[in-house]
Length: 288
Image 1 (cartoon, one colour):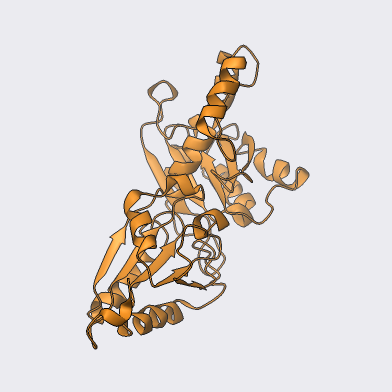
Image 2 (cartoon, helix red, strand yellow):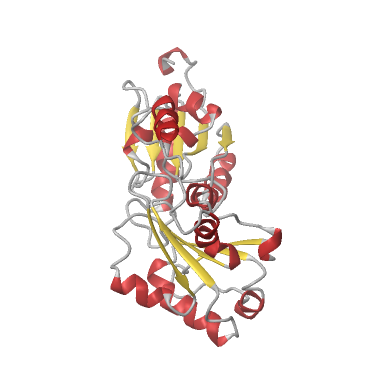
């Protein structure tokens, strides 16, 4: 859309769009439509190149430097992002604020919509698949499972802005460690503190734990262990190459090992489509 056709003084709309966990095929149809109609896209630093490649060439791309909810505020400060959204809106432009995962799950979408409403800017929120759901599907780690006695889910951040552990009910989390799935966002650097604190509050050392980096992308890496072994395994295997890491804690974190047993000790086949087309994957499966 040509923003020059909009009447002078009319504020352009701002769309807070969830880009999902990384795989561009996990974008929603509405997210795609908003990208296609954008005049300017303000995007987080870790939005994948494949997703950014879907933005029309005529649209202005601006990397605002946010690393998908990184509490250290790398790149532009939040107020600077607010000011950019408002400045482009006042020029009558259609603005997409493209955020990792879902805008309202550790994405500061609430802060941004508050600012926009305060300045009378038309705003729409387009949900995205939050990273925990993308990782669970990609690595086949169900968040709930009756046979594993996991009947509720807890999403939390792994560190606070002061780089300390967040203020959580650690006693309750430890007590329910084998009855829920807890997913820590941005927790890799605090992994040892998280494990130690949970064990100090009584969580069993053999509670399954899974770490997933760059979930749903071709760079995806996984590490499986327990509350007692995970910190040492991360150090030994030098896990974590700079991509976003999620930590899954609870009985279903051991689900991939369960699937391997069901497959007779052989690694089970997961259909993964990155460069191949669906027809090629199906043909390979038939040959197997």
